[in-house]
Image (cartoon, rainbow, N blue to C red):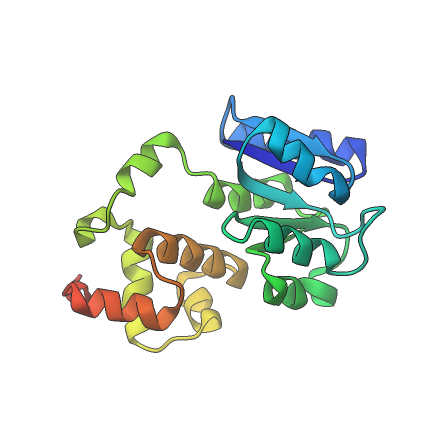
Length: 199
């Protein structure tokens, strides 16, 4: 599997490649300077595990890059890493289908934390086998299910766990993928059906 870094700035491509390889040493990272060459690059380089996308590319305008990537690869996680401020366009990016929004000005550790969520280690992938028992969930995932049952919002959960709302959204993305569901309601139904609300 391959991570694709889509950015027209060579230094930024190199920096993101380095951060990805700190998360998963040895993982294949392919750089793409323009969005219109992505499909042919994927055909040559192999199936994507993650996209890191800059919003400001020579051949994109506004959110067009997010829409284009999600239209062609709807099931592949997409992290927007851009020079734009979160206050300006984060909500619109997430609504358009991005899984996470990161500012290029973020500290490296913040970017690494975000990438790590979408690039689990082989050991984590093995532990995330079929959802057969609540013991297979991480401690944080168990907490999220209990908080879902309490009807807490992302902001409430972020406050309780002293983490950012970004991180809450990412944890939910992993939980939903883990359970094979697409929404809070489905996750809660799954938990009730399997008797997990006593965990």
